[in-house]
Length: 238
Image 1 (cartoon, rainbow, N blue to C red):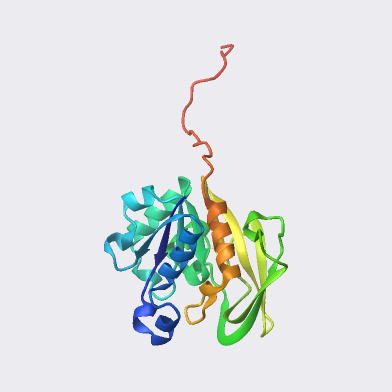
Image 2 (cartoon, rainbow, N blue to C red; image 1 turned 180 degrees about the vertical axis):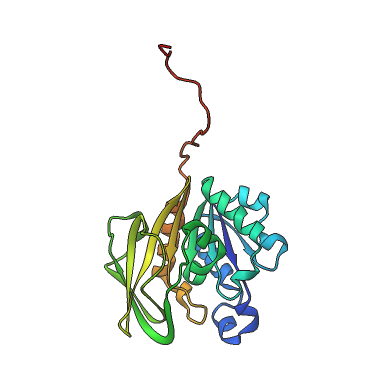
């Protein structure tokens, strides 16, 4: 499977605390464990021409993994629309953490995608609410993270096709932390954990979820629908 991991790659360059956790960038950390899982991986970042997401790159991408936070507005409308169309055409999309506010995710959801948040080094417990789903394969009843950023309801998204994880935070909030959607021929998995100052993407259980999510989101050669005026299949009586 061909996977492209996209990241703004700004925090790591401008914040020493983030660079200490992800010295080569969040994208390289994610790409490394996806490569270990057997996928052909490449990376793309915001400051590359066309944000690294040219027509050619997207055409060769089975699943796109997206991490963004600091400068959503710097993603061009042209590229965001390009990615959206590729999802509608069948490319899988895994949306991580604060990419809930990315142009691509908001375009595909059709809602504001807002939420509550707090940075207070809180414990997060991600409960598996669909243990039969392929994305939860190999996991126990929950994943516990010692420190994470809190996201709280209400999360302004459409009702998910499937709810996979619900998070509880030490401060009392809960959040729909793992959800799937289908748009056109494409499948989307939103997965909440991954604040840049915490080593979340070094956690093997989190890595397992993303690996499973990438595998799930890949298109299984679903037929391309035909629209518009059509000739009848059977002979008409008139």
